[in-house]
Image 1 (cartoon, rainbow, N blue to C red):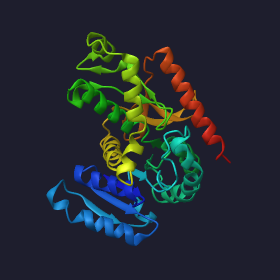
Image 2 (image 1 turned 90 degrees about the horizontal axis):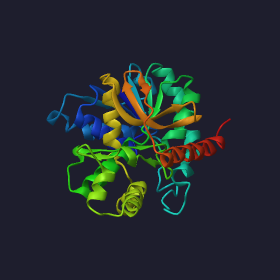
Image 3 (image 1 turned 180 degrees about the vertical axis):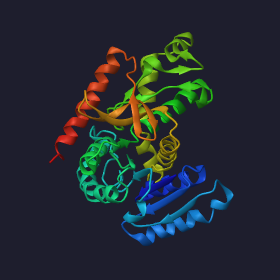
Image 4 (image 1 turned 180 degrees about the horizontal axis):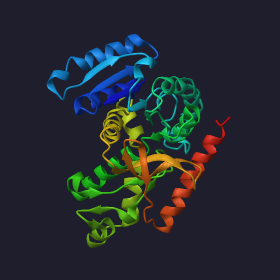
Length: 311
């Protein structure tokens, strides 16, 4: 099981550390524009590997990606550098698309030349339209984005905090895009199997107010993190490592991640079966009328963003 990680910035380092400590792959190759940086990061992590699952982490060039089952792409301009940290800017992470699309068009062909059968996982923001750019550059469909998997964990964490339970007892997901137009599937959210709507009613809480505050906390969690610490990196590192495990181990686990949704014409997140081939199947969740409308709006925002960088 071999994993490639492109980019040794904040997110790439977090992905590499999470994958190494979790034992997500037996072999990890870290590729960066400046190889000395990748070498330093791989060496630093390697010194801690005797204390965890057996893993060989090293730096390399694109040719060293040969045999990878998954290649994570984390290269690009981040939110702080790209000026995507204004809560009042509806475009959000989509501001980063133009510059990062150019970077992807440069590196994806190199990845495919070395590892033509690898699943490509786009982690760079905005990951959903960048998956569409990567798919075009790769010339194949084994491309997926980290999508709303992280957003869904944030949703679970905030619901767990609100109700005073373990996040493990919360079943909730976010779909659509990993951005400001993401859709919270309140109609299916449950705590210990009990619908959140019932719990709020039983407690006499104002559901609309609670929804609004929690969505705000989750939607702008990245900005809150960046305001206190230069980058939002560790959460995405952990969830990206977990996605890698699902692929390399052919787990066929069902999570909300991004893939091309032909009815919408763009990559967005829906509950998907993840296995060795990447996205093995996409499930159609039952949605309320409001949630369906929100999903269409999410798709439209992605279509508009993608249109400006398509050739």
